[in-house]
Length: 218
Image (cartoon, rainbow, N blue to C red; front, side):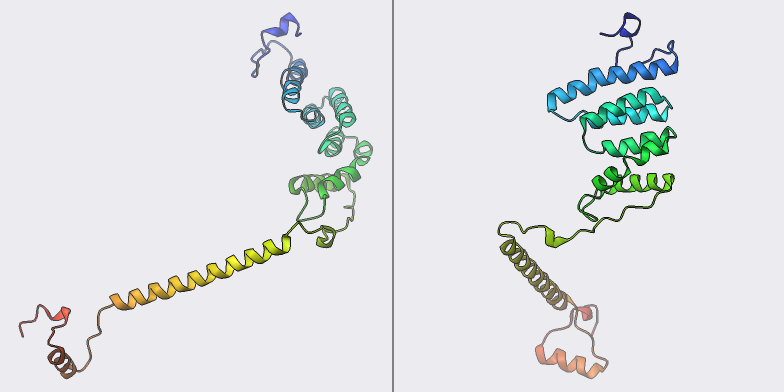
């Protein structure tokens, strides 16, 4: 239960400016942890570690080292995705490179996953930025190897079926283009021959006047 002096401010958006900024950020973070994160975890069964890691990042950005380290320690104990990356970023923000370097390898391996393109792109960029800040070389991990991935059931048949659909689609597109070209040719007007004698001969032979001669008096 929140103290009575802070109970009125226990809302998603706090407007109590009477408290110092350090105390507001501290108790607001704890309130968010209790009221929001714990209830979300209870409803959906999600791991709490990543949420605690994000709160640790927030306090580290405010240079609240004590609170950031406490939250980070609990996040590391609970585990979860990108908790090691949070440790690198938190300790780097607090100006403690030796502590940050302890978690570099775990954070990089997690972001690398199976290797690009099957890696966590944004997390990989963030750990690379951290490595540059810490002056450390990038770990050399094996690239993605398709041979390590076993084929899915009926994968060969599915791929053959997809290729057949692609061929049929290409044939349909070619037929549509030919049909459209034939329609354009059928709708195009006849070209008037350069020799007037040919026009007269053609008109007399079929007994019809070309449509562009309708206005002619002759």
